[in-house]
Length: 327
Image (cartoon, rainbow, N blue to C red; front, side, top):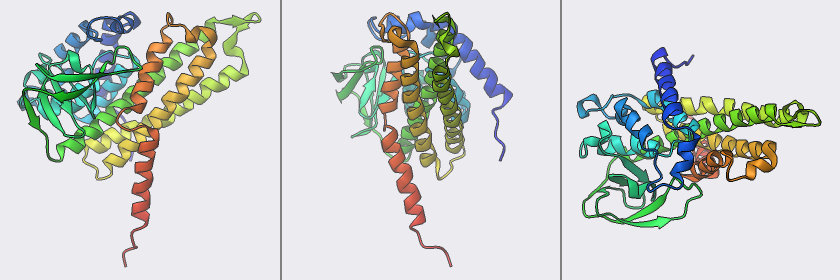
């Protein structure tokens, strides 16, 4: 089977990349660490105007009626920009689950976030979805939240402990929502890794030592080549997982676990290499690298870390090989 994204999918990705370059430069990401709600403001509004926030909501519900395969590249771009917004939680999880009840989610008039049970940006959205331990959709108005510490200053976490308007969630859509969320995080980790690699390459070309760019040193080249290889190995797994969810492949959950595990591992590899290649400046709060590193740390640990997902894949393989052969 030969797979490639369509021209329309690539054009949509490019449009989102251009939008985020304009509406969400590093200065906006940095500001989100210290502002009132941890969000970008203009970038979210612009995404709503493009219809992105209702991408997976059916057209009959006011959305675009797209698939996970259409959205995976958009999530990757949100990661590349370290967008300080609940992109995955809204677009891939909450809107498909709750747009029938809250139509404004499809158009961007309302925003939502989701968690299991830690919900990012919980205090700054209109609708909350908690997937674990008791799956519910709740109005954020009057919700009782217990704040939790976050390594990412923009991605502010809280646990939903009570709300005046709550609806219990049941049925197979819950499992789909969980795997969609993990797919979105895997795609964002890819985008974060790509940006950190680009940032590091630009730095080692400019930074000189002994009269030459440090990027000419063999050790630096090896670090960055390993990162590039890791990204190129992870990307096909992420895209395959998106295709599996789109086609209701019975192995879709395992494919998503493979993608999340590999994307998380390469993101951690990228943060280590980027920090080492930047040297002392990489530890500086004033330098932008830490904004992307900390987002990567947060997402790699969310909704199952690499070890958790690798264990799921191993158990799926072993369960299959333990079955007796058909006669």
